[in-house]
Length: 85
Image 1: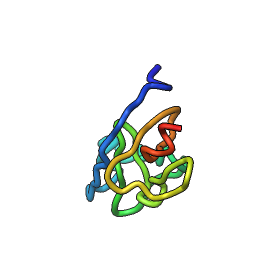
Image 2: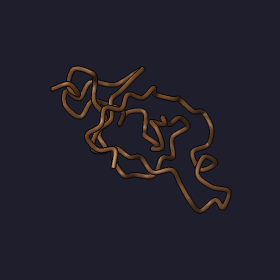
Image 3: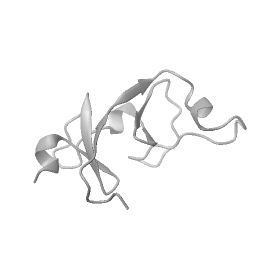
Image 4: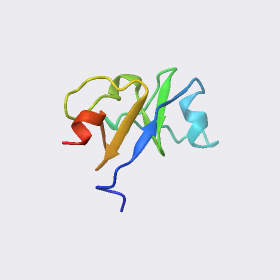
């Protein structure tokens, strides 16, 4: 429903165990929105309500790493320049 709307998000770094962010059952795991793999790393990033591997947080247009802010459209992350294209 938010597809196509401009959404700027700040990247949040977390040092919590990714499994503890999802549920207490221990069976559910955080899944990276960028690569669809389970996040087992010590660090993860959270953009809005989705989780990302640190290395997967890059612009879908130019592939540059996104370090402080990003723009979100159609379940993809963009730098400001590529988002405005």
